[in-house]
Image 1: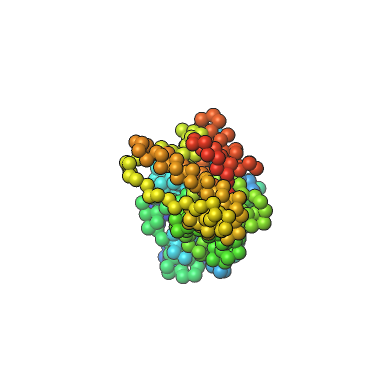
Image 2: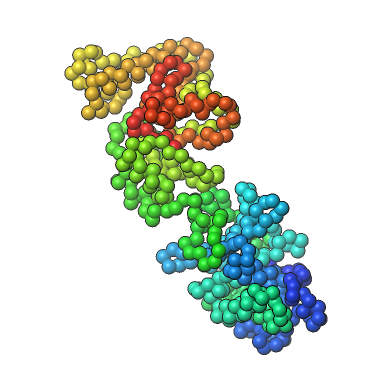
Length: 474
């Protein structure tokens, strides 16, 4: 019979749903040659007939149920510049205690489909389309929706027949004979428009069978799903639960907004190299815009993002750093992360006893005459408006740290401060990833000092590091 995967011979041998199975049993056949049962797209010259197709009938019933709200699901599309990029569908059901949602996307330009299944929080591929596996019903459901939706794939014949079919379904198919004509017509319509899409031109449904030729529907990647790449811009029926964008867009790009939020802090060359360089045509999510507005207009400097892996939290953090023009530091927590790990780590002293260069420290007179230049000699940063007291404290802190590190030069291991501490010393963005996985009691309490109004943390060496007022912690 058909050539596409879901119209192969075995698909016509699958059991029909009721009441169609009973009607076929009474008639002794599942084909019809009645003129009202045959689609106008059936251009066979002889032996013209329509055949009931179980996956198509099940798809039609499921679409009708979603439209009526009888089952959970949604249909919609994503458009860009007036062109449909994706037809989108979700269909949910409960299997035992697990909520299972099947998602299908269809690109009407190249005729290719993508799909996935979500069981609870686990994402996986759809069942393989085969005689002992899936039937491709979900793809046929999306084609049915596209045929109903006003637009490039809308089909008047299909829409009128489906309305009559759906009305009978809502009544519970009280007159099976009456709905059989619509069932034949709908099955024939979809079959002809998919199988003969090339010859039908604008009446056909473009479908690239190579994308499911082995039965495997190409999977939707978790990263793109989480980023909102497939998020519908229009919902026709139901409510999307999975395809909804987790990253609401502002409609503006990094290039559009970078000048608004950029903080012109003087950075060292090393710090400049740590400023992220994401493509400037990236859309800026509303979450990022909210954080930037808070940093620009309020004293808030600590924020929390929540979401499953792959939903864009780290990309958002890097975008915040890039838009503010600040170096980005990250610290990833694990089950074994303890209090010491949050502030420092021990690494092999591969430099041995190599002598340190003698630092040229400023004199007291230098401090009194020009505190900004004195600080620059120690840190490499010239801060024009800095006062004497602040400059003196910063110089003492740097001298202490240099001495502490130098004193460890002869040891097999040396202490290196964590990225959290490094980011606190100067204006920076610090992303602390996955703190919820820490299992050691009391570990997160160590961070309280940095996150509360005190904004300080004590190192193993005894040094107290105060969070820079411009450092943002995510």
